[in-house]
Structures are given as structure tokens and as C-alpha cells.
Image (cartoon, rainbow, N blue to C red; front, side, top):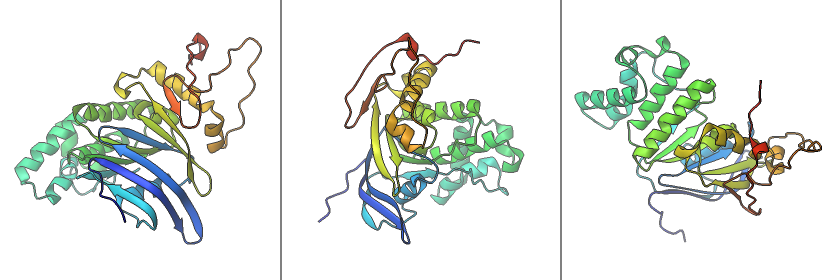
Length: 289
């Protein structure tokens, strides 16, 4: 007999999935609590989007359980999917309209969220094809956040953006989490993005895919510096299980005189592995030009 669904938490238990004879996911367990961000990383084709679609209810669960105790769940896809015949403001307000919010109120809420996302009144009055890809991504994020979701499911929505725009989107998302206890489940193949945003990182690999490693980052996302993010990403990439997941060659042996890389990055906890904390200047990632 199944137990009650826990409020303000997304729980996935013993989840497996297949498309016809092809097994895609096997024995997936994860949990996302209010105010927390969990990043699921893995190579392209590893089943990340399938898992997210199962969590969103876009695919039927065949084996295992997905219990979503959040009242409002919103999903942000890889593409903005804005309606080209409606203005950006109207696009942001679409969900509010579907909820039955009065026209004046939804326009005011959509405008306020658009401005918060860096879209001025000129941009809000334009149609999506008139905007750059980065501005369209801002509009899509505004459309999601204006609904005040409790759980936000992110399907690599920032992957096509350049490094500057991606950083801006990260900051906007973190600012929303600072404002309220928004839970986020993010899938990405970008390890640096995972390190920048997530409190926990799950590494998905294999065929069928399983969670092969979990990392918990102790430093709050809002307090992470660029130096810390780059250093932790480099250390994460040095882990054999991560390199194997992305089919990277084994790390080359250190040269004489080089400091050995720590087994686990500062502030990271890995399931099934000891915690090693080292502070060495040689861990820094800067390249002097």
C-alpha cells in the first residue's frame, strides 16, 4: 500500500522506464525539497529529459513512483516556445489568462515580472521573432515565474545561450529563490551550470541509465564566487566516475612537482566516498596570459 504524498517535496522512488524493448532508466531515486535545487547531469541521450518528463506528468509512470507534493509545478523547456502572433507581454501572461486572472491584473503581473527579467516596455510590446534568442529566453523564464510555481522543472533552457547571457539567467533564477522557497529540478550536461546553481548534483550514466554518484555542495549558491565555481567544476571533472559517465579518457598522471588533485572537491560530499578537504593554491584554475 502506498503512503501519503509528502507536501512540499518531489519524491522519485525505484523509477524505471522503457520505450518499447529499450530500457532507458533503471531504479532512479531522488528527492527535491522546497527551496532546494537538484541538478541531474549526464551525457546527451542518457535519459535526463525522459526523467524530467516523468516528473512533470508528461509521460506515464510504468514502474516505480513519482510523488509530487507541490501545489504548483511549471516546466521550462530547451526552446522558449513563445507564440509568434502574440506580443512578449501577452506570452508572459498566457498562464495567468488560463487561470482566469482578470486582464488588467494579468497584464500588470506580466509586466512586473518581465521588467524583473530585464525586459523593458519596448521589448514587451514586440513580437518574439523581433527579439534575440537571449531575450526570448528571458521571456520564457518570466512566463514560468509569473505563475509563482512551487516547483520549477528545467530542461536545459539555457544551453543555447552564450556565457554572459547564461550567467545573467542564473542570477535571475537565484534571485527568485532568494525571494521565496522555490524548488528546482534542473537537467543539464553542463557541469559548471550544475555547480553554479545546485545544492545537490546527481550523475546519471549507463544504459539503462542509473544514478551513479551524488554530490552535496555545502556553500549556498548565492555565496559562490566565480573562482569557487570554476575550481569545483575542475575538481568534479577529475573524478573517475564523472569522466566515465561522459566517456572522457582517464586523467593524465600529474607531472613531477605537481600537487595531487584531491579525491573530492572542497565542500562536496559524495555517497560511498570519503570526504577529502584540501586547500591548495595549485587548485586554482586561472591561466596567466
